[in-house]
Image 1: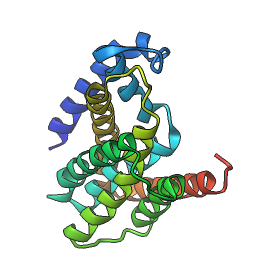
Image 2: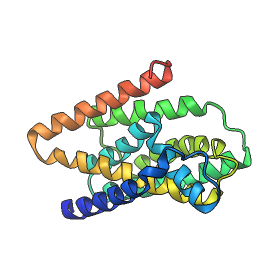
Image 3: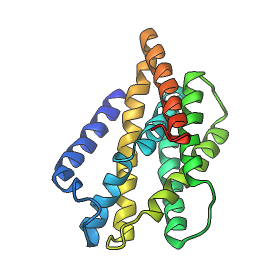
Image 4: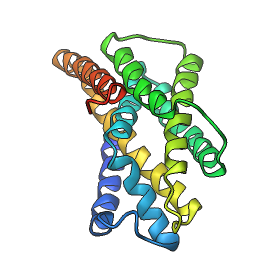
Length: 199
């Protein structure tokens, strides 16, 4: 399992590095390539998205199989639905609050080492994914290809989940448990910062 995660992480990093020269112009691109780069850069350039997506991977690693792979699948799939809702202009209130709450709640679940049934974990992760996806959809550059944009941010989200999983695997060692739970607390604090405008 560790070898698979390392291989996937390396693959995502190679993709990210190959796109790095274009990321600076992420929101000015057009067409398929511009849409993909915009979508790929969007989660990575927003700390509110980064911490929540890393937390999903960490919590999945904490819960173990099958959550370690199911939560990082549920999140981007539901997030894509939220993106379509954002593009379509479906009214959803409290988007920024929901994004901040995702970091607060997921961070606390990790900090407090809370184990929930898999179906409840999927509902929590999927519910928060709607807010993140909606934000992506409403911020879609007008010149970008929507499908390419969605593919881009789903791949970036997967990369962030894998980073969370890799860090979460530190739970196998006693010192790693403290590191992971402390990181959960920091993620929750970041969420509070986003909620009250400090971050």
